[in-house]
Every structure is written in structure tokens, then in C-alpha cells.
Image (tube, rainbow, N blue to C red; front, side, top):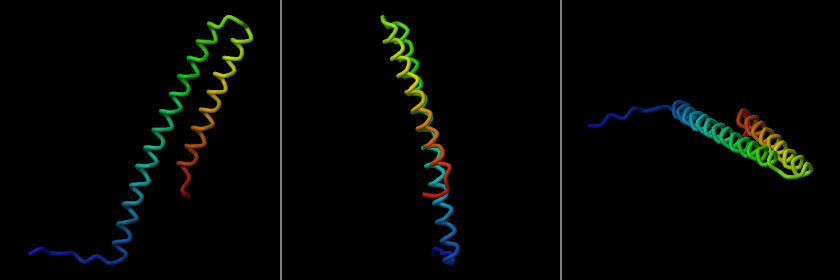
Length: 92
């Protein structure tokens, strides 16, 4: 014979709440890891843009390419910061 434990609605709700909190925590962790990887990728791309700029044949081209690399870094940082702030937020 199997013995079933009767749980109150409050106990069931608490169990569901705990499971939801774990799911949200895993989601935040995965989101944070994705943002960090994406930011690292964009920063690496910007570093390559700088290296290409150093080999450019015209000063105006060098400056334009370096500006693009800086823009990429700025956008990467802003995107990652906004994402992290969103993940820290307790509201949906």
C-alpha cells in the first residue's frame, strides 16, 4: 500500500513558489552568462577593429576605424549594463 501525505493548499503554494524562485534564479544566471559572453565577443571584435585600423593606409581611414571600434565598445557596455540591470530587477 502506498501512503500519501496530504498537503495543505498553503504548503502546495509554498512549494510552487520555491520552484518558481529556483527557475527564475537559473534564468538570471543563464542570462548573465550570456550577456558576459556577448560583451566579451563584442570587445574582442572591437580589438580586431583597432588592429585593422593600425594597418590602414590613410589617416582618415585609421581614425574612422578607431571611432568604429570605440563605438562598438560603448554599445557593448551599454547593452550589457542594461541587461544586467534588467536581470537584477525583481519586477517582470
